Length: 265
Image (cartoon, rainbow, N blue to C red; front, side, top):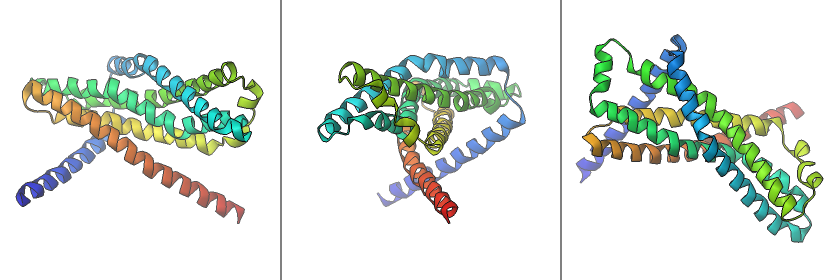
């Protein structure tokens, strides 16, 4: 039993090292030579355009629920006018980046892992290597660039849909005026909030793409192995996003407060 636990820890640390090495190699290859436009275009379309529907539904439904809960909780205290600020703050800083990353992981990340995993178990990746083509350059770099470009844009779209969804439920169901919903946003939403959401979206996109591709490259065991690797990649990506979100929230806000305090001095 002790030996099994020891081997599990060793394998886990080895996997983390291999994953970090993959990220380093992908960064170097990506910035050394851009992939072909045809490969990049397909991934931009697949990750970005094809995810618009699920991202729109997720963002709007989240904004509707946030606004409804805020009005139910705050109207009795005479604070329903801050509903718009609450929805916008939550969507920009937390829910927009996290939920968008979750939806794209389920729709795109799983497909990436399954596709690369299938190529791995059918020895197509070995065939690519035999033709003197770097699999990182051919398979991962287009997905990496497309993810970094499209996921922040999808996050912005999700935030917009969340704010609009919150407005619709507030104005047409709870009869909150448009002025009351939008007027406080410019006062209480800072550039730091927007920058924080953007940084999170970029970090989540890197995690999403690299974890999915790494698990695909490590697939073995035929069709069953592909299914197992795909499931593991989705679960690991979700957990990594949540943990990263926690540390980014602490780090960014601590840095912001320190800079603000130093500026006041």
